Length: 113
Figure (cartoon, rainbow, N blue to C red):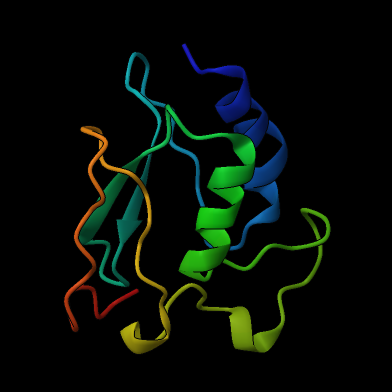
């Protein structure tokens, strides 16, 4: 079952993000799956141990556009967000499951983000 923080994010925050889609998989732990524009999987980030605020911060650091309301228009420059050159992305700072700091992304590792 989803923890209350993740459940609140799913119900209240996901509808505000452009190009973010929820897929319910019964029994699966919640995770953010980043895809390329060709729908190729780039990375999986577990969300179970994150607070709602941490998940929102992560999405904004990754470049997802957050609308004021679910039906608000998305500005032209954000239509393909979070797709942008890798050089503008901050290093991913999500703690690994073992508590160790993850390695920083290598230049060019995720060119489709």
